[in-house]
Length: 263
Image (cartoon, rainbow, N blue to C red; front, top):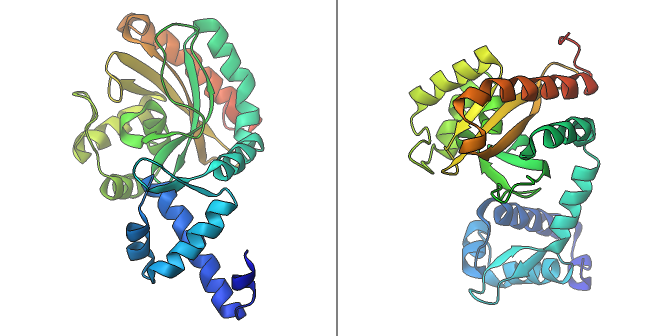
């Protein structure tokens, strides 16, 4: 922290740190914001917001886009995210099973968790085919339009799933995206009954995804693993076979996480 902030009383310093953390959270949620927008959201003078921005910018936590002048998260946040992902027990437990799926099918294998109502991708093995998914480690997707998201949320109490739908909305991304709660609830019941979820061109046209949930030591859903690729490789005649392998991989990961209810 700069000298000016360090010389202030402790109460002022704590309030400033709180504002700085809130600023980072706002940028994480909204992508990019201007000085005026940040000032209004933080409910403080523009000069105070600018001083916080300058300190965070100097430390690499935020950056400024030269084109529109808005602020976004900086390289330091990426470093911290990568460090967190490297320490993830889920990622460590999943890598071997992800590689097996990748070697068997050659399509993209994703590992994701639910974070702030969205799917956060914590590990990806890219497809060896020319047509591949564009997600990257650390990127996010709407839970209701993804196989991973539906696989995870299907294991939550209905009240929690409804709260997520109401808070984040059910935006249509393609003509196949489920945009109504009643239809999503029915879909989640189907996922829970059969043990795997499908993304049938719901987030990207021409692509299909099969996902299965992963559980932790306490029997709680920890995340999900998926295999995704072009429709012609994920025809309806192959989905059942692919789903069986994805579920087997998810079960193996769950056992490594300490879950013992799977034989």
